[in-house]
Every structure is written in C-alpha cells, then in structure tokens.
Amino acid sequence: MMTNGIKWHRSAIVGALLFANATVISGQTIEIDPAQTSQPSLLTPPKPQRQAAACDPITRRQRLQWFLTSTAGPQHLAAGLVSSAFGTAVDRPREYGPGWRGFGDRFGMRLTGISTGNAIEASIGALWGEDPRYFRLPDEPFKARVRNVLRLSFVARRPDASFAPAYARLVAVSGNNFLSNSWRADSEANNHDAAIRTLAGIAGRMTSNALKEFWPDVIGHLTHKKP
Image (cartoon, rainbow, N blue to C red; front, side, top):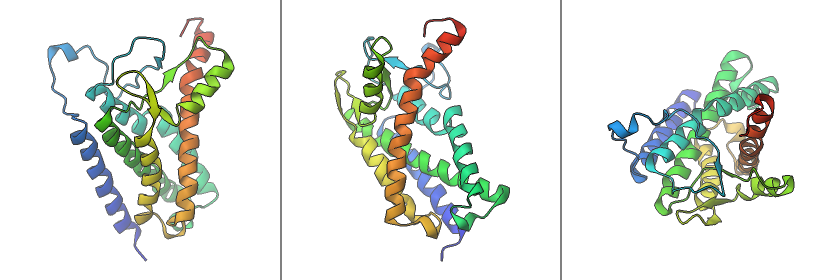
C-alpha cells in the first residue's frame, strides 16, 4: 500500500509538470511592458463575455489568467471548502480520517485534481485555439440561456468565433480523473470512482457556467445596475 506521503509527492510532481506544460505549449511567457501595466491582475477572474459582442481570440495572457482563476479563484476555493467539509463529515475516503487533518488532505487532493485538469485543458486546447472561457447570452430568453449553459459544457469557441466540440476539456476531465488514480487513496483509486468523478466534473462545469450566465443578473438586480 502506498503511503500518503509518497502519494502527495507524486501528485505535487504531476501538478507541477502539467502546469509547466500548460505554460510552455501555449506560449504563456509573460513579458512586462508599459502597455500591460493597466491590465488586470492574472489572479482577477475575467469578466463574463457576451457571445454577440466582438471578441478577439483568447490571448496567451488570458489563457494563463483562466488557468489561475479557474484553479484558485474564490468561487473554486469556496466549492473546495464545501466538498472537503462534506467528505470529512461522511469520512470519505476513509484513509484520510476525520478532523482538520482529514479535511486538509481532502481539500489538497481536490485542488491537485482541479489544477491537473485545468492544466491539461489549457495546454492541449492552445494547440488548436480552443477557448475555455464561457460566453453569455444575457439578452436571450431564459430557456435559450439554459440551453447555452448546457451547450457550452461540451463545446468551446474557436479563433474564428465558431463553436466546436471542446475536445481539450473532455480529455482534461476524463484524463485527469483516471490519471489521479495513481496517487489517490486506495479506496477510490479505481475505474468506477474515476468514472463517477468524470461525471461530477462535467456537472461542475455546468454549475460554473450557470453562475457565469445568471450571477451578473443577480448582482445587477441587487445594485440596480445593468450587467
């Protein structure tokens, strides 16, 4: 049986390698110049884009920004806190045990999985210009917006503004969850649990899309400002 220490070392190495891969393959080297000083921080979540608005293909900097904020942004960290707390409450996986240590192990494992999947999506998608961002339809009827939430869970924008199957995303969600069997706790390091995690990952993307589609409207209603 592999110890937790060895598994954590392996997960950390894999995460670091995939982050480096995302940086190199997609050309993510950032050169600081005066024109960039007014740009938002890489850790600032990008504003939701409208499909109808003129939108240039995603840049290298924007792709890196998407990776960082989708991995360690407030929304994703909060989701990790909730899921880790639930896992601790029901003691799953049992190898981590209860208490704060178990909570920390579960939170760290989830973060490792999220970063690995996002690195795969960012790096592979850069090869053919797959845009991982979500594009809203704020002026469409509610049903059309719900369809957009579901549709953009499986398709992604291309450099010519068309939409095509999100191959990099599908590879990332499934590949990450099966790859992580090599460092997960033994009780969930199997193909059955990996398949369940894959479905949960797709459901998580739908939830994230729904927040990006409708949350600006909620904020606009509360602040009486048009999103």
